[in-house]
Length: 368
Ligand code: MG
Image 1: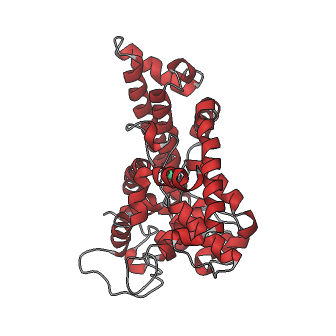
Image 2: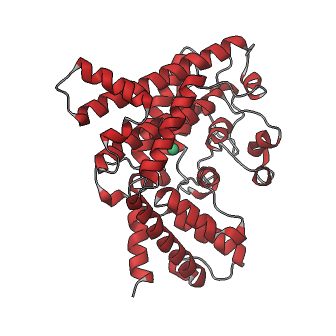
């Protein structure tokens, strides 16, 4: 690994909450990544919705395949920029652990249910999973990850919540930046979902090839692909176009970020933390990214068939929340908890459910 001096360095990590002896074979970020991959929360990502509900088809992205794509893109960018690949990979694999069943619809429903009890936010929940909820270790709660991985997982946070989180929340109060590895994973996340949602949207038939021509960036590349291979069908053309677009985004991100790095005098990770955000797309590609997002929002996320899922998710999550609050013994929670603590436990339980487990439980307990 050709590490730059401002990359995160496991030897200089701010450490784990519970002190552990170092591994003989792996650096601390590798160890974090391995703990994430072996966690129960990671396995459950396989059955959680990205945009399409899991049972709608086997070829759609799930939270798991999305996370793998984010990790692949992140590692490539990290290697190009001389940053720590293992850290970028660990953050990417953990970045969506806190998602509820049924994607964003599930998160907004659970947030609504939790309104009187501090709300629900998937990003905070990802941190809560690795800090508290995973329980496979004897000496500590959670996975006891390094500060750098936890810092990357917590990508946004209100000041109110930051105050409750100790050291990991401080940067939000002091308006500081996380490591470059954490910054790049956010971009890799967006690059991954913008492109795979076009692919899944097309596969589902909700997004048609002609609609994509409304995005000039897509149209320009698709025309070139067709002129190179006139016999190509729309599906192949779309796949090739998506691949080229992703490549353009990743190259632009590396190029623009390297130019920004070159302009700064960065010698350590602390210089990175005290700077403005460094990892960035060029202005041109930022605009192109916005046009892709707009198309996806209008043509896919707000499509009536996707909206049906939103309505179903509300019903399932609301009903389960009410049911478990009334009868916490159904999920082995002691009734003696006060309402606030009980709500938090119920919310942890529901957030951890996969789509199909939530649906099965809903059918069993709430539909008579
Ligand atoms: Mg994501």
